[in-house]
Length: 412
Image 1 (cartoon, rainbow, N blue to C red):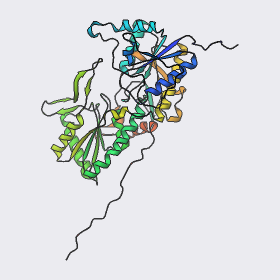
Image 2: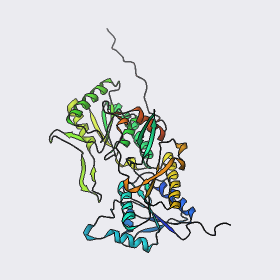
Image 3: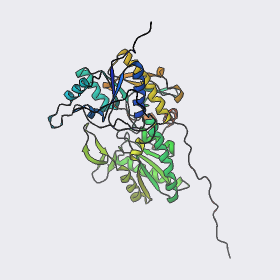
Image 4: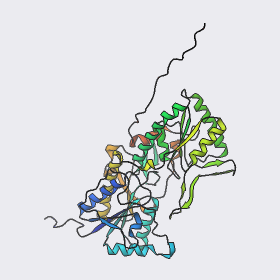
């Protein structure tokens, strides 16, 4: 005898997205919404992340509504609102609890990184709110316990929704910059998002970058001298006399005046999770290359381009696969968990049987592993190229391949 109603008929699941946007959030929202609807949930969307559960609340109905998961960013909006911040003495937790009750929300799915999902887990532990996390970051630095099997090694890696699409954009921008760099025989220093990890910046080598600098490898006074020597060597060996160097916005750079190794800040103002805004290290590095080596060096900040644009194929299927795991968590009422890939796989292996779940309260961040980066050449290793090869197709490089014969004046 069949059921008269779907399993979770009469229950309501709400979705919010917090922190920085990625090209894969709308796809994540659509995938979770579709599966929750099949289970019988009414599905709500909360606008502007945690901010949408403050005051009177900002809640919309996603049930039986068209939704374009290919469109990048998040139609629900996002913010860096911290539920446990107490600006002007307000109690945000009380407001969140009140709105969850007012809107009759039974389960909350939070799409975000360490900050958003860490706050959700704390609400689960302290207030008993049923939550399920969903991973999101272009930095690809959430500790998801995803293993990369390479040449007999087991390397702890990450594949997080948003990263594959952002990586595609970074590789394309890198390849595009080479034409202008070649034309003027310059050194182009391209700055890429990445506060504390170089996962995304390292993808620039897939697009033809000659060197990469990452936060995991601080540029001390000694490292800087070695770096300048390497820049000069590569530039002189390049028959077109040009270089493209990708640097993470969080690269720690030695300041000759202060004698300190530190990041370059675009603003000293901090968000509610205590993060200041980085930016401008590419300009500092380009200026020093020009001054120290006498080369024409310029900087280019790729900035928010990495966050922008449509959801690419790998991300699309990845969000769908992780949403399948959300179904399992909902059925088992395994709250306080986040779905993840348990191993690095190619596109056609993105299936629920290659997923697992981890505790939302112990996500944390993971830097680019040493095995992926060669400090002596400022470049990625074959292990990283293999990792990226699971996520991205080979790049079709723009090249102007031939030289012109040199004309010598005739002797009279």
